[in-house]
Length: 196
Image 1: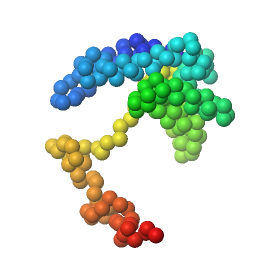
Image 2: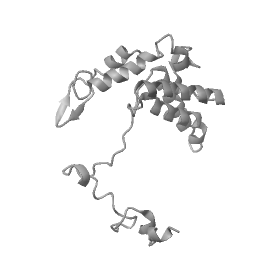
Image 3: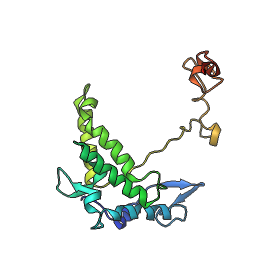
Image 4: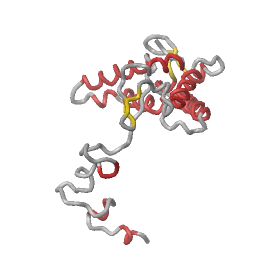
């Protein structure tokens, strides 16, 4: 398949996914006013890979299919590969003035780094290394867009917001409540006394 167009990306988002916000199911993230502009911004990034003036800077030939794939999937083998990938990331960041915080290149590079070190993940079981390589190949060849979230898990679903994670946070390994999030204080060290 290789690199997708913005239109193909938007079409892929019109599926049976179940996304809820404010207690309401979002039927189409590409049309919902809360998500549509972000979806179009993402599509514009994908279209940049097809711009003849940028294709060489944004893509490389897949080692397995020979198709053009996003440069964020390259497993760097040289300083030049790293510089080329960095320049590709900068093109996307410049396009959004750095305001699109979770553009596809972020997780692509993250997973690619794991795939580059796949043998290290396979020390106990070779299948783990092969799983990484297979997944990397899949996301590279299908130009998959991924993201991640950094939130506390909601332990008690009857609670919302800041209290949702109570029960798993704020305790040490013995189950004692911690007075302070500073790990030095939890071990009886006053962080203020560490300053010269």
